[in-house]
Image (tube, rainbow, N blue to C red):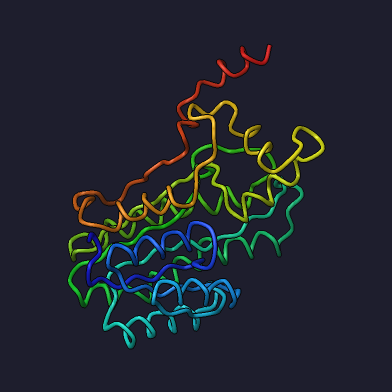
Length: 263
């Protein structure tokens, strides 16, 4: 088992990528602490994997401190952090108010920063550790009307590199995962906006948004969990300070080709 006897905290662990990662990590031998805002799904995942649930807002400094304390008290330490919690609001720069901008950064960037900061003493105590920041392909390529989300996901890449440089000499690796479209609750909400315009169902909408992606489909949460496992395990022991793009080949596509197909 690739994570035998390791302890992991996974934020946003009640649904989607976070829940799938918790399940996979547990199957690979890890003891898991999942965090998130909704008690019911979070506690269900924790019970399923024999882990612990810590309910709260990842932007709250007290919440992340509690999560680390639970990991230490329940399982004796900490080895892996997966900062997965995230939110997204639509809007171009001229349309986004301060409240939505600040909330997006509070959760997506500051929340990840605070979780990692709270975890670092425990990771350093072990003399090694791995950090996975779940960003997005939106960090590298922009869609329309998503300025707060895209800027926040790009900021995570800077945090990743800084962590790798500062703490690599002390045994800590840090990498970012950049998913494309993934079938999750968050993805489903985005798909709902297409129904009635260019799609007839959520499943159809996923097909529409991935029609130019080489693999012609969205990812599953389990596929993203497998990427997190790779980055957290010894299989990536010489990988740090970088990004793993898992978007079905979307960023490889030449936009002129898609325009030609549409002509």
